Length: 195
Image (cartoon, rainbow, N blue to C red; front, side):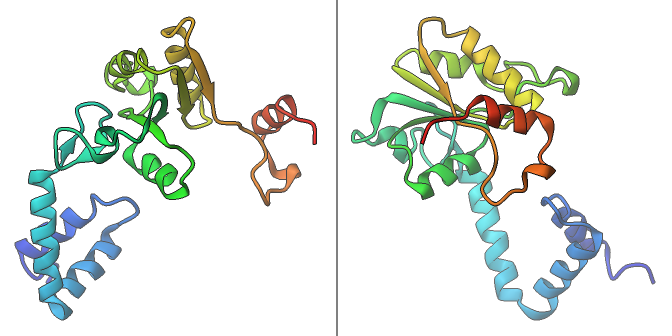
């Protein structure tokens, strides 16, 4: 017997869409939900269905929201002149948890990557440029990767005369300099500061 049932197979395959979940992990999750905790399985199914139907993107910043405008965009106490651009909603949450940004956000849909077929339009860059027009400072918090660099350069070129900054890059806390790649080491050396 290769399987319990087609429904079990479908559940196992569905769980594999989650990052880092392979066939064995999906099998363990499916068995746990069905064998040990049916109440949690039903709550999970209900929450997933409700979230899938009721959560959309904020029309201003594109973070996930249950309304057309998210709580951050609707908050009059937020600094409207500072716009922080991130790649995904998870990064926005990281900044909110850290309490580092009291301005507005814009969530891209990934990074420009011509090799992967991701154009500026696919990454919501035109909407980002439009949203940036009302900000006095645009802060780019994008990955230190070839795609992140290309996206930063593209956005910067579209905003002449606008103050555009990006997060500092360099040696991560607790890292060994010998283990750093030349690009990271070069960025850290070039951005050195007095103390």
